[in-house]
Image (cartoon, rainbow, N blue to C red):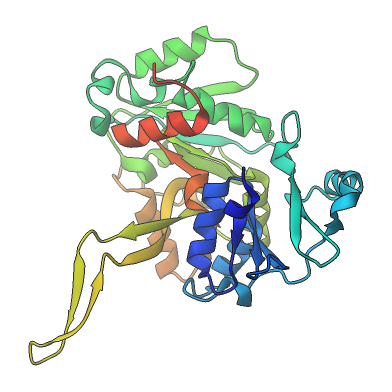
Length: 353
């Protein structure tokens, strides 16, 4: 990738900088002046800390960037590479004698798989796998959504393999629609983890289905929909969840929404106060992945239809800690609809089966 595509000016907004990180795929960008002098860097982690601090996304990135990043002279690239591997940083800028950005090395350019920081202990994963997946018709007329293939594997197996890489060994699938097909597949395919089935006799929603696991979950658990993949460090989410003392932590993605029209703001007398063409707004949205404490399951009412957002809202109303763990928009892959499924395949570099 051309280094210029990873460079922004200091007056660039934080929102634009986050977009640049997503599009660049290197988890960091460089803030430079017109002479390409390196002023600072802005990383995926900087973005997350800024979100958690409720920062203003219209602020200039120059005000929130890391102004003292680790740098190396361009002639010492080998030393920089050794430092990056030792410190496990996402990248290091290389500068010339005038302090101008000349090159950079990135962790995800190294050969082999990136190292994974496993959970401190295996966390159980609960997958909501019982829905009809009506937005994916006609695929789900034939297959239940968890078994829709993304490349050579069904989406559910992609999800489970990612959590297994972080140390999860027990997977609880709450199943309903076409449940026999789901059981047949996972009973027939060898895998290194345990798969447990929770039969849902009637649709109870993403929260209500958890009540079927009362007495079975004794530690922090992960709840996930069956159509989501995240490109992020799951162990960091767990560490944040525990350090914050949260009852529930919702993994939340930054979402940019553009209104495809000119928006008019009115005065009280009916006159136009201002007009804005195709304004863009940024929000944190629920990805459908939650880290929860076992009390959440034990305190659910049995056989009551309820979604996870309503469960979280109930704890918020009780003034109990419910947190959000922010990730960038591109770190969230969702196949809930046909267009999103096609995008997921493109992002993973696989073909739709």
